[in-house]
Picture 1 (tube, rainbow, N blue to C red):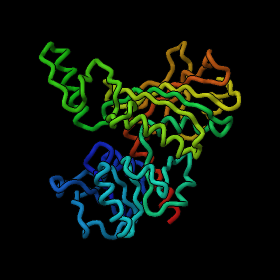
Picture 2 (tube, one colour):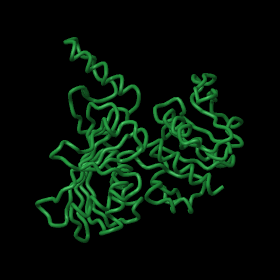
Picture 3 (spheres, rainbow, N blue to C red):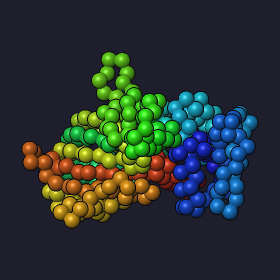
Amino acid sequence: MRVAVVGATGAVGSTMLGIMRERAFPADEVVPFASERSAGRTIDWGERELTVVALSDESIQGFDLALFSAGSSVSEAWGPRFVDAGATVIDNSSYWRMFDHVPLVLSEVNPEALDSHQGIVANPNCSTMQMIVALKPIYQAVGIERIVVSTYQAVSGTGQHAVEELHDQARAVLEAEEIPPPKVYPHQIAFNAIPQVESFKDGDDYTTEERKMMAETRKILGDDSIAISATCVRIPVYTGHSESVNVQTRDDLSPEDCRRLLADAPGLQVLDNPSDGIYPLAIDAAGGDDVLVGRIRRDPSHDRCLNLWVVGDNLRKGAALNAVQIAEILAERS
């Protein structure tokens, strides 16, 4: 089995390679792809080194799987070419997610959707992904009528330049120096919270990130009747998205039963003893594969509403891990 990793030098691409090595992914050959300027550099991969290759019609031939994390324009242009060359593409960008013929797959939630793929499989948005890992067991058990979610998203979700921007601004504040002007974000991110993740399209007062969460949730769960509202906020945390989720269920579910239900679900850890300071934290989620859920409590304003606090590593489970898990399922089927 030959596997391509497109965007291998980026934050998510390098995490994909690391996870494949950790999980002993059954590949005979792994080839990292990146831009022309990165071609020829080597990447440490355990006992061997991988040499970065530039995308070309010749270099993409002969692959079984291609894991993409290089942005929407690259996925749009090169995804179909890999498919035409015989590969199945697992794409981490937003480009293919809402195409009807492209399954949007979360490994613990809807792996059966892979049965209908036509060469391209989409990886969900990181914020959507960790929320649905926590909500799918609830949806299966008692149904969901409405979701109101507020996210608190780490800067690594934007990329390395955003991480550097936070670092430089925070250092300047702490050392009483002039704060460098923002370049990645519209405002200073250090010691701040920005109620804008991604962009506003003309005539829409919800951001593209908020629209993704709403649309992708319905597609993954296969239920267009779910009412959902999202507010996405960028905060000065390096890694780990946090979410406050208010979920209105169809049938009653007590907080105690919810904890038991989630404790038995795959990919989840329940951390819920708030009086002792035990609840999910971004620094605890960073570097881990599980989604953490806690602060499970009844909404006092509604008999069939629960509040949850959901945290996950946005680079691992929010992107790279799920792509590798999908690849593992496809590899088993080949």
